[in-house]
Length: 465
Ligand code: ZN
View 1: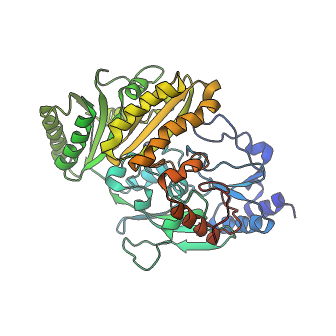
View 2 (view 1 turned 180 degrees about the vertical axis):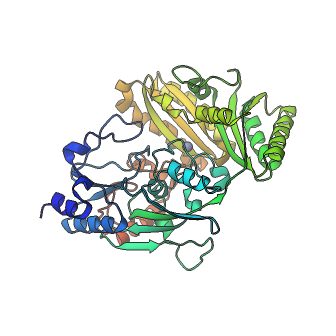
View 3 (view 1 turned 90 degrees about the vertical axis):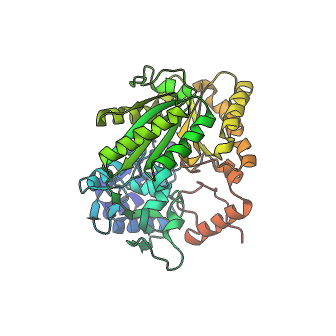
């Protein structure tokens, strides 16, 4: 039987898109190109995923699993010789257990759909990021996504209790643990979380939920120096007794970008500050927490770590402040952005950013540089915008200027976006030869023919024997 007929016999006629049809779909967020593949197959459940994988495995056809396509490192790109396995029909939210505080979901559920479903039961799934409406929980797990509240709740890894995975040969591994503590040998789920689809296809997840916060206080403040920003982080964390849930820093050029047309946001603070910080606290008592938040900011002003501040007074104002921070799409206007998500020790961040500004000015000529990030996590987003016609020529030089200094200061080439195809040449800045070899051996053990998301993360080379 032809592959397309066999796959249609598993997932139904409409479950398979041919090359011509799938090429009408966008390749993803901040991409201008279209999807490419031999076929796109859309199974509806784990059994179908397993049968699709078995079928492709038998024929030696490589498979790329895709979620919401909001990744930024070409981690789910496919080629004309590959089959895309999209989890888009696997959108079932199963049991939400309010006592155990867990939710069971299929991998294609979007982050926002889960957030809304658990909030309706007075619970919360606290992982949050700008792409919440499209990003799927399978993709979030496969890339160990971070986002805006890592400071308080950790990365995706910390919120996943169990997984179900289909291996390259179709074997279903069910590790659907519901327990917070389960210390019985290798924690297999962690092999797959952050493996970028190279070890297996995540089909279902058990997620850890929290009680829904009853208060949310958000402020945007202007700070006079980087030193003041780092003091402010320590001060707010200490003053809020564990309630600090986000500490997002914007350098002035980024603040200007998201508060000037064509951006829709209006500037809540004047443009003279050296840094802008969005601070969020979540707690259990709206009256007490709001007073505590305002007191902590007042004390920070007395110590001159904060020069000016606006505190959101309504849900609409809280949304508006977060919308500024999330309006990263503005970097697409007027040029081609090269996007980075590095992390480095806070003590080195100021000198790193100053040196980077200088080396870009000397090294690539005309460009725009925007800096912002989850400073509480040491995670800095660097965006360098160049003219579209210069993009291919300048990109390697920009990467060198951003990544090379990180090796010496113990930084990471990816704090949260992952490696994909894009950062593969730079993996060794952050991981040792021995670590990379061990990753290859693990991969060879699970997917000996290299059929899953081939070429991503550490490339196609066979494992060391
Ligand atoms: Zn981020």
